[in-house]
Amino acid sequence: MKLLIDTHILLWWLSDDTKLLENANQLIAMPDNAIFVSHASLWEIQIKAMAGKLTANLKAIIQQLQENNFQQLPCDKPMHLLTHDKQLGNYSELVILV
Image 1 (cartoon, rainbow, N blue to C red):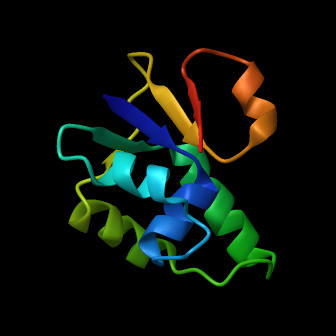
Image 2 (cartoon, rainbow, N blue to C red):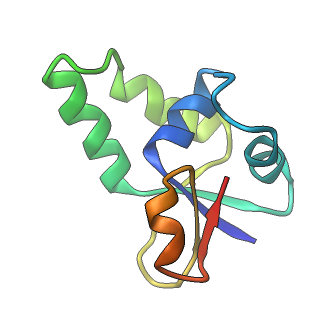
C-alpha cells in the first residue's frame, strides 16, 4: 500500500515518540508499504522551526527520510493519507485515521 504520512506522524516516527499509536507504527514498518512524505510537510516543519514553534533541523530530517526509505511525494498518483487528524477522516476513503 502507498501511504502518505502527515507532519505529526512523520515527526513522531523519526523521534520514536510514544504519541504514535501502535497501528501507525505497524503500517509504517510493513516492508510492503511505500511511505511518502509531502513537500508540504517539509515546508511546515521549516516554517514552524523558523517561527520558533518547533526545534528541528530540516537537513537532518531529509537525511532520516532516506535512512527510513521514505520517499518524497510525487504528485502523479492517488495515495492513502495516514493521519491522526480526526477531521480529515471524513473527506475520503483514501484517509486512514490512526
